[in-house]
Image 1 (cartoon, rainbow, N blue to C red):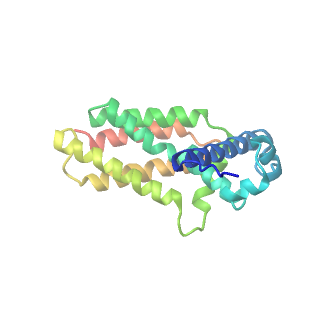
Image 2 (cartoon, rainbow, N blue to C red):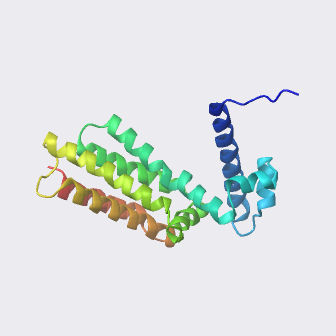
Image 3 (cartoon, rainbow, N blue to C red):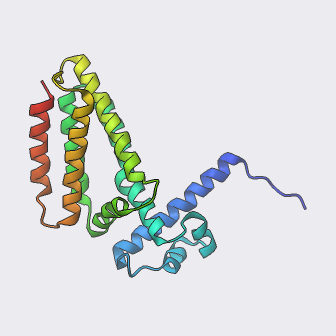
Length: 203
């Protein structure tokens, strides 16, 4: 019997589709029933995969949660920066669009998303995806502050890198405080951050 070889590209696409199906099913169940009340078996049934297949992607539910946290919450940051860079030419416009994006996204999140935000920082893994995403995001911020300095709409009194650290640190703290405290006035704090960034960074 002839064995049909699946091309590498199709195989990888298939793997990504299965992984996405597992994550989407898990998110749906977590939202409906809660994380602790959802079993791996229930996720497998909804995703229409065998338990063996599940464990081929995620060794346990904690690993699935970290992956969901990265893909649904923190992993969208790079796409956000790309959109902002493409759609806005001034630094002030980019900063405003970034705050608008965060206010809109956080406004659509609910309890499961708060839990996902808190999952990755608690990870003790040597390879922490949030750390890598955070460093990558700071680099992107530094890039557009550097561009702003070259274009004359960002102060040259400080380096682009320190501006990037200030922005990333402030926004990360606001997000974490929101995740920890349901009553945290996130929109008010983001608006304060908007004014701070505009006053300190932009000319």
